[in-house]
Image 1 (tube, rainbow, N blue to C red):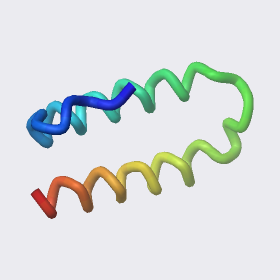
Image 2 (cartoon, rainbow, N blue to C red; image 1 turned 180 degrees about the vertical axis):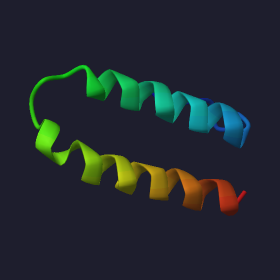
Image 3 (cartoon, rainbow, N blue to C red; image 1 turned 120 degrees about the horizontal axis):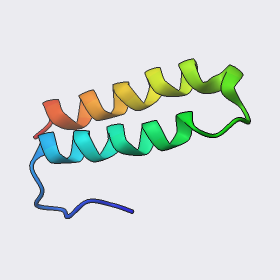
Length: 51
């Protein structure tokens, strides 16, 4: 579920963090989660610097 396009970057980052926490609960692919987390954090960081 995407956040509203006019939502503040902090709200969007919080929503991304909540989605990440949901992924952490899933038992499969835990070996790839650290790499995925760094990739997601990089995307969120890029998005907030461009706003």
